[in-house]
Length: 214
Image 1 (cartoon, helix red, strand yellow):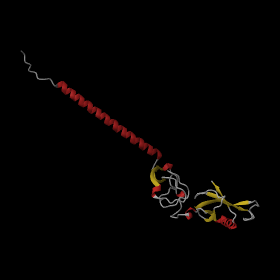
Image 2 (cartoon, helix red, strand yellow):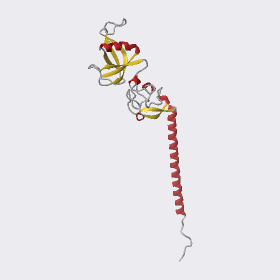
Image 3 (cartoon, one colour):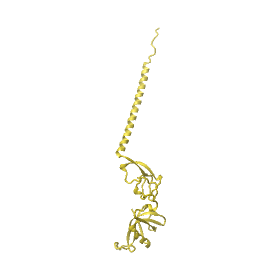
Image 4 (cartoon, rainbow, N blue to C red):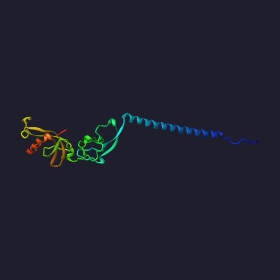
């Protein structure tokens, strides 16, 4: 009987282990390269998109519709980064505590032109330069109004008699009056200084008609 002096042959098993280890390493390296490439591609695309719009700026954005007469609080706005190329001019830097004079819609940038100057609030905040406010009685023919609405005022021609006006049944005495205050009995409107005398005359005579305009 022959006895083999050669021990077990382990080289094929070792080769298999090495082959599997190398395969796993290559697979891991491949996945890592793909991940790095994807990350670089995403960052590059984002940078390209940002560059295409230019520099961005943090601006105040309305979180809900802000009606005229409303005093803006911190819960009414948020600050968002937006491309300068898409932004309007006259952006309000510090709108909190200021009164809205013209409607600001949801997600709209808050502008200086939609706010009263300084810290004024109430009806006076909605008055433009060189205007004064009159409280007019609400009659049965008064249209439904909201603060910020624009109206026109009319009076009988015999009440408002000037050389430049005709003799028609009624004349317009204010082409653009802004509603700055409102309650159950009266509506407060702002008119120019030049229109104020005729408005006062018509109001004292009890013959004044208010018409809503757009």
